[in-house]
Amino acid sequence: MESNVKDRKILIVDDEPEIAAMIERFLRKEGFYRIHTAGDCASALSLVRTVRPDIAILDVMLPDGDGFALLSAIRQFSDMPVLF
Image 1: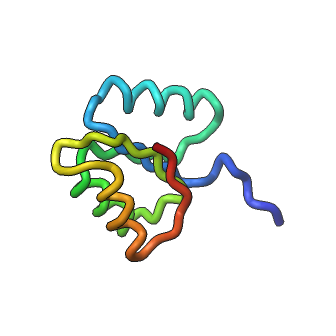
Image 2: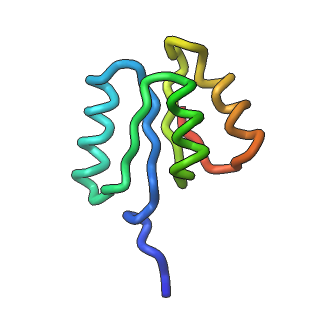
């Protein structure tokens, strides 16, 4: 049985709520529904550990660090695809 790509879990990490909401609206319009959001590195890292998303969309500048440092932390335990 082939899994539906729309069932994949997506993590959006952006400290600007309007941008995160815009990305989420676009993804929902395309049929994705397992969407999680975080506004900082600490929340994002926690979600990656608990939710285990299939892909992450990261902002570069975050209030408690940057997306590249966050990616380094994620890479310690996950090889999921990441978009910046």
